[in-house]
Image (tube, rainbow, N blue to C red; front, side, top):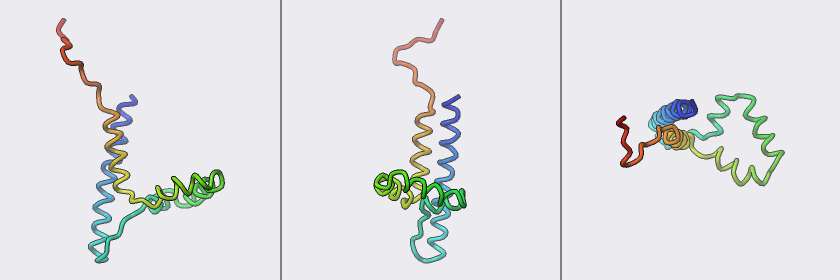
Length: 106
């Protein structure tokens, strides 16, 4: 069951990554400049008002940790992160390999 969920989420993230690449490419071509959608832009579009409250909560709890890990993550491009997470989940969800020399005959 966990493998199934990992594979489904991996495929969804992989598809979202490709859609993000196409979206960023189309925007870049239309504006004659390289435009990249960041993770914070995606979070703001999906979560609307909750994104700002989540950021305030993270900054209030550990400001140093937010500056070290949170801020660079939210400013990074969303499409490559979705692709890498999708590939990692697909790798985790793959079925186990049979051992070399194992016979499955009765």
